[in-house]
Length: 318
Ligand SMILES: Cc1ncc(COP(=O)(O)O)c(C=O)c1O
Image (cartoon, helix red, strand yellow):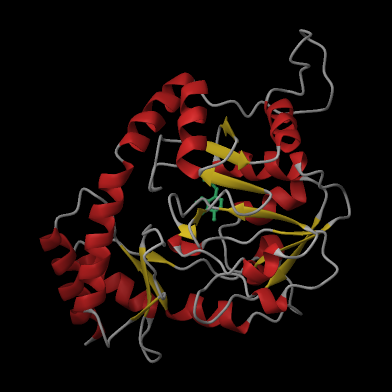
């Protein structure tokens, strides 16, 4: 585990990396370590995986759902209320959220980088831009070890606190003596060994993912809309918007019948029972969820597999 932490810290370009049992655990640990407490207001995008919001609630804090930007599909910095205690931008599908505006305020910033290993903004890697970053190594992620997560931070106090909470709050110098009420969020050495091996292969993963993404973007140009990718973004899944008149559920069903598994976009959290809020104004997240579909993208795919996916998508849209 220690070796994976050192290698991952070097990869991201931060002083500290704290390995843990999942991306969800990494978010929870980072929030605890940043000092988030009951009643704090935490802004996050309405369109994200539910773990981002759950971690906030697990600290007793209040999630403040913000609509996403029409182009980046990440949190719209212009809509983040001024009075929140902190913000969790999510680097959606590998594209880095616009942190330039959020970075300047004096509230804390926790990057949810679960979907964006290796992505960067202005030369700084995700997980090294905000006060802390949280990564997931779940099986489907760019770097995967079955289940696992990592907190990254340049702040030594935050790192110490995250380590403390990870191991039931035990005092590092005194056995069975607990400084805070913590959790068992440890990563196993077995998972870390897989993570290390994956990390070594990252350059190859990134190249093959980018080549498949380029192929999708060329073949589907003018038919679907992709996020505006940059040389610095990562490629997690090939997420795209179908034409406005297409029925994304029907397209997904047709493609599945032809052997192509796709994923829907994350519906806005405020539209589902766990976080239902009928007053939430998130029109962009709603539209993206209606039109979005994620095409398969992983390094076991050959270019001809991606060609097949494109043929089947075009066929399903006819
Ligand atoms: C944006 C985001 N945050 C957090 C997580 C949680 O990670 P894990 O499944 O490892 O707990 C995920 C997982 O998909 C995610 O996509």
